[in-house]
Length: 228
Ligand SMILES: *Cc1c(COP(=O)(O)O)cnc(C)c1O
Image (cartoon, rainbow, N blue to C red; front, side, top):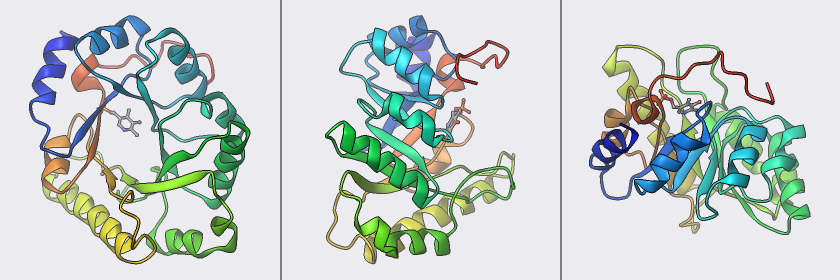
């Protein structure tokens, strides 16, 4: 079933769009099945769960962190994480940079924007992002690299609302690419789209879609994970 779902979704990826298989709460056997079907990018939202899975699964997997990241948990993923999607403050970025220095590497990050109408979703607004990028502290961070933006649309059936939120994120990306990141071709990623809305996200310019339940089935949040 995982293999069938994956192949169906992979076939819908436009050129330049990468599929992240969001495997949070799922057992390593499910991830291994996706791996065997050719999937190499996995998304997790708990640091210890990601570390534990990284330890037992093949080493050519790229691990993307997609959830709210606590500064005291960064150390668990800093040695291997490929991309952190959820940078929503200068303090978090400073903390990621510090762990990257310890590991003698540069960690790629996305700025997470608040594009949904719901209050509960994390993220920056444009003024906060510009303040972060203009700050002298940011200029001192040499072990992180900002490669794009991320956002989550409102959880709604209103496709027009979802489309307009994705379009807003794309405009934010363009604005930052033309200003703070002029001459930085690596600033090219727009992480948007989940199981319920990834086709719209692709139409609106997504480069990274984060799909979980449409690949692995519904999640059971009652399964304990070890760092809640
Ligand atoms: C869980 C999660 C996803 C995947 O959600 P599905 O609806 O299962 O596809 C994508 N992005 C983030 C940030 C998530 O936390």
